[in-house]
Length: 386
Image (cartoon, rainbow, N blue to C red):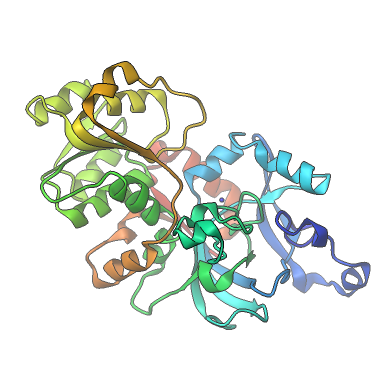
């Protein structure tokens, strides 16, 4: 999931501030931001603060943010459409502020915003939604056709900045309850809803089911946490990092498998008496992990792809067609964020445990290096404070 001017992307005709406004600018409207310029090219630099572009906008003064695996993918060049779209719509590309997670204080709202006001503490959702288009009417918010969906840190400037403009504020922000920790609140921007909706719900996890989660990164670990809301009988986690596997065990998995040291397919079949699992979730986005998933799913089971794939994978339809499977993939809609928030507030869902590192926003370049080398740093999610 920008700032030489106001936010760009869905309102390209308003992308430049007028010269009269620029003459009034002073140091108070300059902020720090993490900006993507191209593959392997990101900079922590000064940008102009965003301004209201539409009456449904809000400007948020960020207090906490985080880094997602998707941000790393953008940094590595997985999303050239960012530059391509800007070139097509605006004729040039002058960088994109990264980030689609975080919490903050509302600094300003547009005239059409009624649910929030200046001073409110809010969660910024990774998905922006108009609430009125055909897809929003079907709760398919990630594919909002009125300029919403996943746009923050992607098609418009994101949350890794001191201020962010959020479109459709009334339907894209969540008030932060007093008894919700900062750590849990930031996890509700993306990681937890993605795990729950694309992994657990699409995987149709039910009481007594056998479940395997391949990949113990932040979203995979979110799948571990939210799967337990549905009482599976077996919860197997596969990864190549012993530290993450130990964390998965602490968070409730019944079995862990290091696929770098043993055959994950054989072990899963062993744990399930040769049957395979009712639900397997792919939470990496790679051929090797996809292969494990398509080889351990039992007849009538669900394979839920959660990982972001940058390359095609070999889909063994010749072996799968006969098994009456349901195979799903998708982008989070955040339609369960409110439910998950209540579970976090009640203590049933301890999502704050996903945060392993507390960092300062002024050290964003170093923060990216920590997340990039997560295995060596024993990092899961970073809570970055402004």
